[in-house]
Every structure is written in C-alpha cells, then in structure tokens.
Length: 146
Image 1 (cartoon, helix red, strand yellow):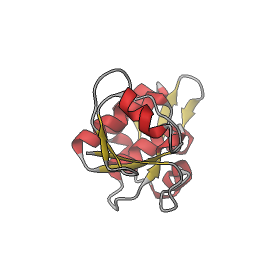
Image 2 (image 1 turned 90 degrees about the vertical axis):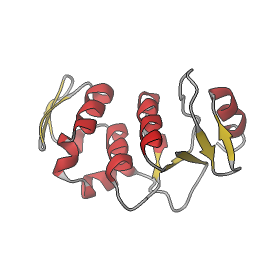
Image 3 (image 1 turned 30 degrees about the vertical axis):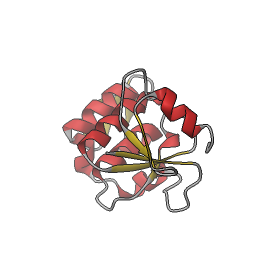
C-alpha cells in the first residue's frame, strides 16, 4: 500500500540522493528492477554494478544516476522503513512509485503535487487518513498541504 505524507515531514530523509551515495549496495544496481528503472527514467544501460552507460553523460558510476532513480532504489531496497522525500523525483518516477506501493507497504513524503497519471491508483494520505484513487481526489487534498 502506498502511503503519502504531504508537506514537511521532519523524520523523512530530505535529500535521498546523498543518502543513496553513502548507503547503496552493488547488488541494487544490477537487480532486474533497478535495471528497468534506470533504463526507463535515465534512459541508461546498466553494464555492471560500477558502470552505467548514459546516452548523455557516457560511462557513469551509480553515484551519477539521477536523484529520481536513486530515490526509487532506496524505496525498493531500504529495509529500515525509512521515509524518503519523493519530491526529488520527477513525474517520470510516479509509475514506479505506484508499482512499489502495490508490492509492499511504502510511505513517501511529497512536498509538491506529483502527477500520478490518468489511470486509477490507490494511496492513503497520512495527513487525513483518506484514500485516493484518482488525480482529482489527490489534488483536492494535496492542494491544502503543499
């Protein structure tokens, strides 16, 4: 289930990319889920745990991936139930956040209105306890907090 806390959340990790740079494990990079997320979000190919081929930057290390991909990997692999500020992610990460939220209990912090697309989805807004299923429902609540 995807749980969203809107607005400032003191216990959330505010800048997940920096946290990722200091905490990621090599196996995260080559996991099939990460390979798909990196391909989709960053348009890059994973060559190995220390090498990614970017069409823009050329050969890069995992530390040079986008903040969005780094945050998605933290959401997928962090085992300590930390809450990450998903506002460092672009809207191109929203489908992955929804996917992760279907596969596990996931709590994120949003400080902006993320576009979750036109399809129905399910998320609980922790600020109010309300469930949302559409962008319209999400925007009506989120507009009061961000």
